[in-house]
Length: 123
Image (cartoon, rainbow, N blue to C red; front, side, top):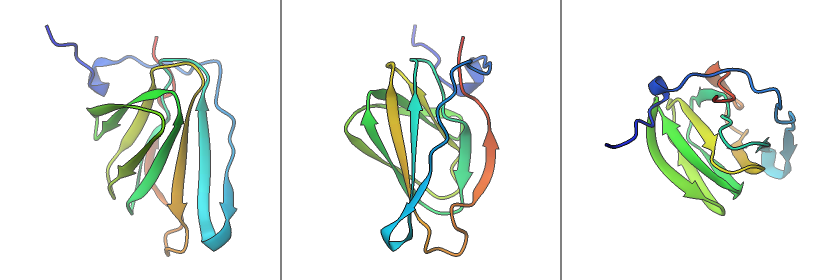
């Protein structure tokens, strides 16, 4: 039997270990947000942006979900391109996984989030 890895099949609770909230805007108005997931099974809050952007998987392994469906598993180092308007989240498969979101803030909508669901841990 093939395991169900859809978000609909998961039950979530707020994990007691939250990633630090770190953000930088650097040269040429590039916005960088590293997200460190301390434990395997943690999720980055599901969200969407009005433009395409990249996320660098700098350490560890993740499952990527887009619009609630599993789209793949990736191992660091890997550059993940997220299309505009797509709800996305990352599930850590290893402790101390780090995903770095990279945005071009020269755009009018400056890192605008269309919607966010705080899904951060699975039992």
